[in-house]
Image (tube, rainbow, N blue to C red):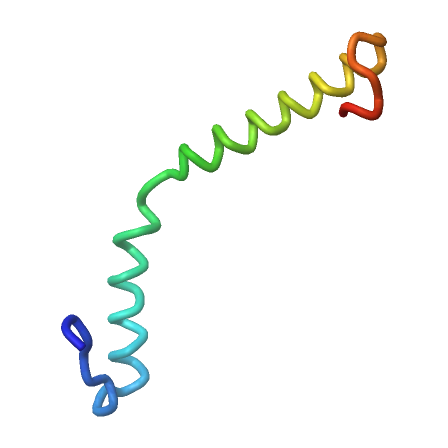
Length: 62
């Protein structure tokens, strides 16, 4: 397979250092998509409650 490395000769400290380098590439980015998705779901959930409690939307639909 291309892009794979033979890690059998590496020590545990070397492997942890490699893992930290890989993690740094992904951890410095803020997950905006996840934040928007979660807040959007929360707003929809609140809207369904409001619509059901005011009688605009029947309970069987929500």
